[in-house]
Image (cartoon, rainbow, N blue to C red):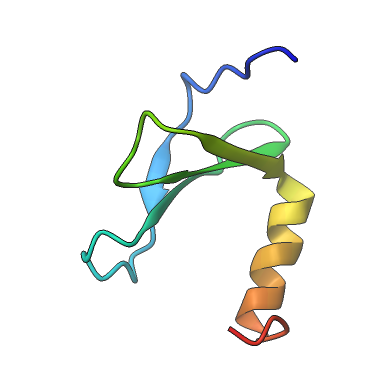
Length: 68
């Protein structure tokens, strides 16, 4: 599998982040994908999902469908 070029990723943390170090950063500026990483380990692994899947996931979390 080819390695994905994330050099143009613009990483952001949620404005609701509490500053306790338990955060993720999200890059939503990449065509067709969303990248997610641990804010404490910025050079570590990155989860990459389709923009459509990200929208479904965040929508379900907001509506409480996952019981979080």
